[in-house]
Image (cartoon, rainbow, N blue to C red; front, side):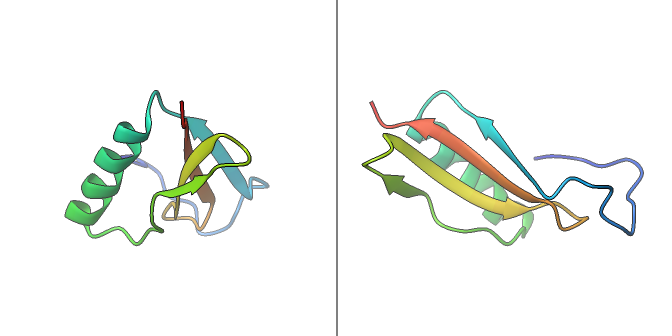
Length: 72
């Protein structure tokens, strides 16, 4: 899903990043693609109070990534 041409063995100051996708269905698709690629990840989680759904995983350098989507 995401590629990294030149991996660094150390974290370069970025500890996390959040990217927004269009819909919860996009998160479900990303979940399946991460599964297919053998990439460890969390579940698609609805955060009703925040009005968001999230999907968390880490890149090869250990940077925590979250995909988010609006629930409505």
